[in-house]
Image (tube, rainbow, N blue to C red; front, side, top):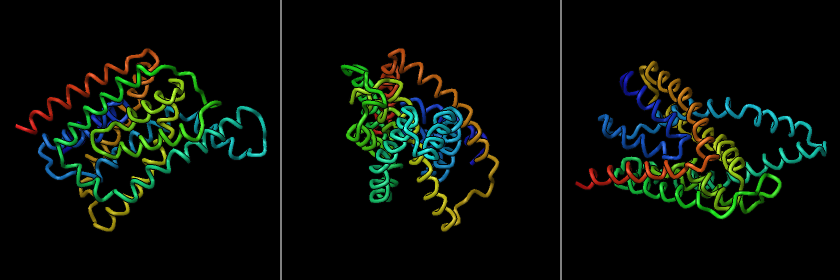
Length: 268
């Protein structure tokens, strides 16, 4: 892989991991048209470390608050009780992707070379975004969010292991469908991504060591990670503003356009 290819994919990962347009779908399609004929699953996961670092930096106050609330588990202050509740909801929401990833990982990996399926699922992502923004109400904060809400959002995150389904788009849409506030849907979506990305990173790194498939030239990979971090942090800012200002539909139009065009070329 060249430095230019890695940088392009890193910028693409940073934009599409957080903007609800499916990072996996873009990476599958872009790798195909860059001439990288074999799915670079380990490189995809490595790029996720860059965007994961952006999540940690952007939500550093939330993460610190969660950690602090656990060290003071005997305190009954309302803020710390709610932070502990959020932590347990994150654990609960992680269960579906842990089960699905463990049971179906080998089968799903084969789909990362399927351009028609990826393109079609981008159309599905666009539909999720468009319909969720028109949900009836967005009034449930952490005080009202319950077990069923966390499980539903977690199931949607598990569905996003399919290339073309946006993880952020699926989880934010799921939150909005369940009537959560936009702010909660945004925060929970990305805090929920932390254990999922860490788990995938550990599994792929272990497999790479066993198969000796680590990169021989690490500089392009490091450049891609840095690009993913910088662009990803900017994308988080953009997404939050779009969500608050009811502009998610802009991303749905993009997903429909990209998915439709890619599907058309794939079927020619």
